[in-house]
Length: 487
Image (cartoon, rainbow, N blue to C red; front, side, top):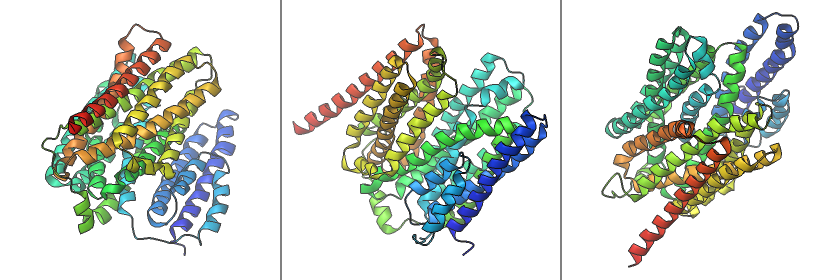
């Protein structure tokens, strides 16, 4: 009984809750009241290690226990709330006898790899610019190394897609996990801006190998009429990474150091590589999965459906880049506490996750992806326009919740459209280009607007108008294709 997944989750959860209380209630007063600096460093390192074990216990329980994904989501959220783990432990104790175990779920291991990849990305956001300046980089170089990661990541995405079609997604996943974990450890050796630039190029490139291979593995083992729902589940793990990554790195970097944060993420990557070697290496799709995963060739990798998916990927991350760039500046201009920016971003992520895990995820298999894609772009465009006019915290929270709904509609739609528009033998390459557009969208969203001579409000308005025009193009193009088919 001790090895039961829920029992393992309870034990690590209690340890995580205790270490959090020690950190907040003992170590922090020792540092800020009595000046004992090492207290937070020591306890923070211990808490970070326990948190990694707790995260792995959550992932293992999600793979083995027949319960809703709301359980692992709740388990992750309470890790940041004092006494939250103890409250959840009471619920888990009662639930332990109510849920049956299931065979190892290969799909959830792939989801966990996606979580790791995006955790790696989002954990960099709050700490990389300050880390760059701490090793002697100028403000320009600090901004340059942030964008450099996305550019080298784009090259890794494309190469991953090409190689995935040639050697299969499993080998590329293993290479990506091992090399990315190694690249994360290289930050311990960074002592100058020049070394940081080299590490950022290597890190971005090898990290770009993971996601196209992971999504290709998932797509090739998915029944056709469940593609939208499965992609929505993947979106849940992306959303969790978006919420947990910045909070975890921001807190742990202040307690320990930036390289230590990346070490924790690297440990997670190495453990996932070990699990992948044990389980994914021997996984063979059933005949039913193979038959359903095979899509009739459409003549070209760059057909209308694929191009729409690429456009959607660029729009999604362009909008994200704008939010990441402008929202903190808008909050500052309104005179609010800068910490509100983080909670606003969490609001949009939580709303998106709820749509991904609740029965609403069935919408993505019941409606054509072009329809839900257009709805998502419209909602995100309206959100950008409304942010520019929002001057109260309540209004901003409501608008970011609306943005979360748009994000939740767009992300599964473009993935489903890509899967349905590509044959299995070309899907790796298709996903490689797909995530290259993701990376380019982030760069364009923050870089292009920074060049325009507009105010913050005007830049939000421009972004909103651009998104609405894109939604109109998607809708018009869909109607035009339908009209050609009828004639």
